[in-house]
Image 1 (cartoon, rainbow, N blue to C red):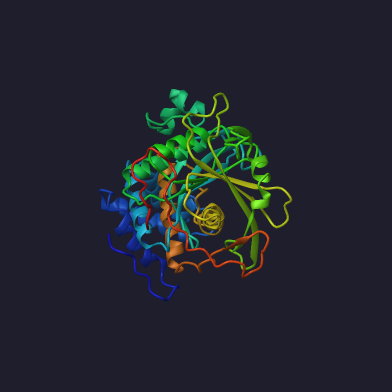
Image 2 (image 1 turned 90 degrees about the horizontal axis):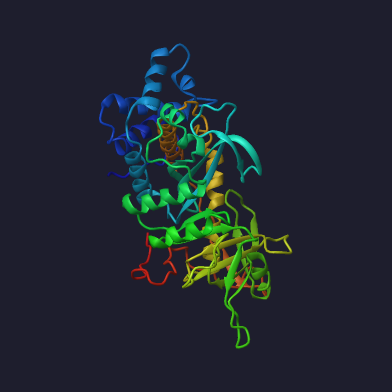
Length: 430
């Protein structure tokens, strides 16, 4: 697959870039007319003002174009997976220093009940119950830019148990009702197994109830991870010294706060901003994360709990669990904060190209639209020539937080997982 070579002039006509991307990513579409409608739709996503509906993309009075686009998006049986895989493989070779796969939730509130996957459900990101679709994107992220390459659409129970509803939406027989986190984990597992991609850490937020299954699933495929967790999560850890054999169990927040004397200072720059920030970090080796109705697994899996204090917080406010045991805390923190890079690119690029705007009702149509929106997102970022790298953070002992307290750590490298019993501890290199 050829590399897209962009000229220095960032005002290059986006249509020319789309032509190149069509030839790179849509070879799997069997017919020329399908590739032509993909071209029309992509140009509409990046050029049309306002909501990116099929009607708006087709334009006023273009009923034949609207009908053809409707057929191409909602009914045509082309497979979106090869397109997404080609996009991921290309970006992995051409994006600037890709560091991780980041799972980004997406909530699409709806007024009716006909759109596939819609339902009244509690949404943690909103903190309330909403009538909505819950989806998730898997993004290839670096400090400079991030790109969505795979999407999941969570299906509430009625969408898989009610046969008539399932048939009307064209939901495949293999689709099941899972939590958004479970959908994302399964997508990452498929990518790792079949997409011929380099292994990179997976960064995502996971609820207490989903965490044991998530850790087990990633460990099964030797996938490194940095999982954001709630401070209330019970964790098991060993004692220290001859008189404290352990193991003990306590909330993650309490364990991290008990280690405040071991904090280190990290100076860094937030994604999309120019002013510096200071965060205090510490970590603890933990043995396991018990499930809601079961004890900690035995033998225990070595994991690291990382906690962070912001400039203004008296108590630790953010927590992550990782199986990456051979990298400095500053590098782990940078990986965790790639979620901010993704959130920024989602708001500035992915939403403007219409990722939330699909109004059709079919499962196939939703995935076709999400695929084309991902390519449009890539076209927007590639067409602007990328971004300026964020500075590498500096780490120092908490007792000496001055700017020159310690030399900067090496650039974040894809790490080795800390999982015993797996195949040789292979390095995940770029």
